[in-house]
Image (cartoon, rainbow, N blue to C red; front, top):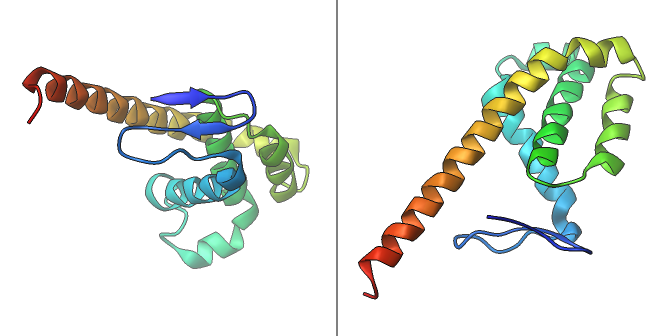
Length: 132
């Protein structure tokens, strides 16, 4: 379940403590690494990653930005500058990543929705089985 508070963003489920704005940047960085490693495949060839790091960082942060927006995080204060920096302000580069970014962002959103539905189903099963 996602909770938004006026002065802090928190992600809370019955299985994890809230994540607040104080460590939001760390969460974002970890999320970007997850996206890099598992979905974008950026670290499969480290030489390729080094040659095209600007493109890959642009893609990864763009995915993180889109998915963060889907779940209610406004990371624009950090993400927009980060993306523009790694793209060297090249709007054509940013545009060229759009289809891939949206495809991966939709994959992540689907995974998150599936996980949330599984958590809700588990909670309903726990409630139906009564106290232990």
